[in-house]
Image (cartoon, rainbow, N blue to C red; front, side, top):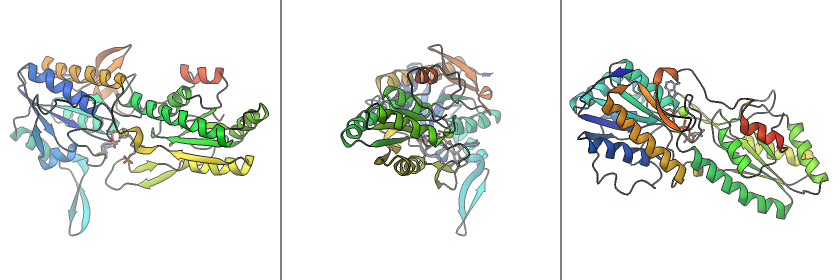
Length: 365
Ligand SMILES: Nc1ncnc2c1ncn2[C@@H]1O[C@H](COP(=O)(O)OP(=O)(O)O)[C@@H](O)[C@H]1O
Ligand SMILES: O=P(O)(O)OC[C@H]1O[C@](O)(COP(=O)(O)O)[C@@H](O)[C@@H]1O
Ligand SMILES: [Mg+2]
């Protein structure tokens, strides 16, 4: 952790996929910093804006009314990495290291420190800038909750709420039509959204990337319910889940993104298999970006506000190279270096997973 005092001008940047609560973090960080006499800039559209010198000054007025608003007033991207930045030359895209230009843009604007709000990819880039001498504070964002060394990322609670609402709605139509309904949720390679929404919505099967599933176990669960007179079943499946010995389902490849793979398609595949193997009508719903859009829950507004205040206070205290983190319901500072190379996945001992097993939820194993 670097310690630097007497910073007067800072900037805030949002990177990666958007998550409900981004604006609440921005508002809290800006208000805290302005209250202590700092000048605050917003960098537009993630690290792309740092390279292209796209900035706006953030004042009390710019953050008025944004607490409940989804998205980010600064814009974001899950593509541009300044250390491997895409540029079109003679019709071809080439990748170059534009980090020096990005740092120079901040220097020219008198920006002495940067608050970066993002997921694992964005925070990794923030750590690299810190290594180059830029004082950085990171805030853990993502609906996926897959960032290590924090118990919660903001945005997750809202995504779980949206998925739970979808499950409640699928329940009534499943029951009326005697169908098997499959709900595919986001989360990349972690099953947090699926596990929490599945438990909140009373799913019969919850399939997560951490437990490769046996289709036979899922079918057995559906049939066992049928025998008990339940002529419908609800299955939540994470986009990153896969069958035992099977492949992960890829929806598309996004060039220009370090994390090129976009997951999706496993829900539909499973629904078709269920129909074939049980003879029951089956439908798949892919929730997609609905999970990321719109207003944050009260929990996410509060968590985001706590993170934003803590990030600005870390700048004011001169603590850099850190991420603000929720541990035992307190916001603490952890070195960005502690996150590198780690993932945050559901373990076999996870309390909620075990609770699911205790009440008879099928996890596909
Ligand atoms: N492992 C990685 N190493 C370096 N850059 C990465 C890595 N993963 C993602 N990135 C880059 O970080 C940025 C944001 O990543 P992404 O995973 O989409 O969002 P998030 O910040 O939410 O994790 C993109 O520019 C992406 O290319
Ligand atoms: O918006 P895109 O490019 O389709 O990406 C979808 C991915 O982004 C997410 O919604 C959020 O991921 P990040 O927080 O890492 O950006 C994932 O759940 C999903 O797999
Ligand atoms: Mg990521």
